[in-house]
Amino acid sequence: MIELPIHVRTIRTLMTMPCEDVGVGRTCRSILAASRATGLACDLSTSTFRGDRPSGLPVHSVMPPALSRLPFGLVRRLAERALHRRFLAALGDGDVAYLWPSVPVAVYESLARRGVPIIAESVNTRMEAAKPVLDAAYAALGLPPAHDITEARIADQNRRQALCTAIFAPSAATERAFAGTPVAERIIPASYGTWVPKTLPPRPPKAPDAPVVFVFVGAVCVRKGAHRLLEAWRQPPCGAVLRLVGDIEPAIRARFADVLASESVSSIGFSRDVATELLRADVALLPSLEEGDPIATYEAAAHGLPVIASEAGAGRIGAETGAITVVDPDDIEALRGVLASFAGSEELRRDRGAAARQAALGYDWSRVGPLRFARLFEKLGWSQGAGAPAPGP
Image (cartoon, rainbow, N blue to C red):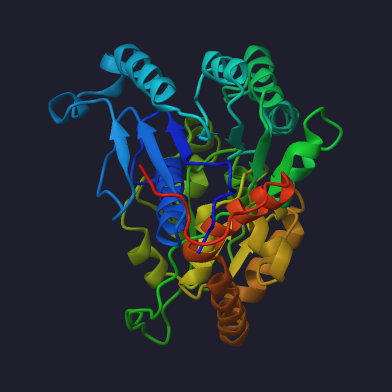
């Protein structure tokens, strides 16, 4: 059970963007639901909450059901103004503001003036560190940068982080990106995770001569190293196929049209049924150039798949357990060699898959969700009270 510090009443969470049941929204609600289940007094305020509401987690959304079905862009300005006004009004003495990306700097400034502790979530590497990495990757392809990191956005992020009491960094890479910055001492090491199935359904039967299926889950883009993977796949491993589960960046589609059209590659675009794709696959891939702590890696490991990833793609589970096979995405020949090794050895796939599954058990949301708040209270020297936690809202 999490006991709140004696002077803290409730962790009030704000997600300005719609809280979807995929991506960042799913990550946020999973952390809060897992922490709430162990006694943390917390809630969530968001413009729109989509999908099933976690049991026991108070959710406050400003969009009525009829309007929530409209494209968010049509009502964004109205919804965000109402959301921020209500969030700031709801904060009382002893509350802590837990802010997720897209919360504007004006909200940070308002909270700072009132002396409200501000805890932020760094879901990706700091923009100031990520931009040169991505700029170089696009330049190497002879393409203009297609990311949306600008100097203005970097300055805005730096202003927000300067106002924070503490910042959760979910991976070793996100931690390193804060080294040498004015907020380096405010970083709380954390991780993401997944809801690890206690038992896995049986995998579909495969014929003895069936190809080994390598699966890539996520946006098929430069940031996630898809261009390096597809370059390596110009010489695919013998007896292997590549399955892409995610929307393909136009620059990738144009540059690697021949590879994408080959018989050894299939793509289905974005899918909510990732579990089925993982059950049909033999090996998971994520050679990202820049990440926060990729959920795709945790999900693949939880399903017993061996995972081949870059250091960024391996995330916290890779750094802490060694259960992820880490490759340098810029070394194409080495990447081809690793792909061939896994394609050619069922024993290797089985052993590394079992290791990944075992490691994933330590990153179930029920553990890593509450752990981050325990680390936060310890880091800030907030002594926890005895007995039951403070009541929730």
